[in-house]
Length: 91
Image 1: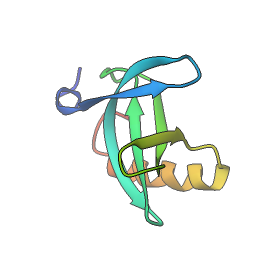
Image 2 (image 1 turned 30 degrees about the horizontal axis):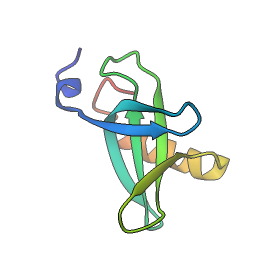
Image 3 (image 1 turned 90 degrees about the vertical axis):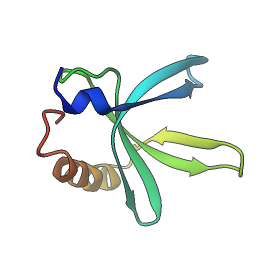
């Protein structure tokens, strides 16, 4: 495990497809066109799969994150997150 990974914040998501809570590590976050995005991983190892989620505020109480599925949006975020974590072993 790299020194960077020891500092990652772990947050819980509710997976509505599987009806279960999933804990993911937040690698990085950014804002693009007034939308907040998280780069998350399943665990804190350098070999873990990474995902990009977009924040969707459905009401003032709950914050919902959904996977980014639009190709143009995803490609732009890959570039941004790549630059943000280029000095780490995470991507």
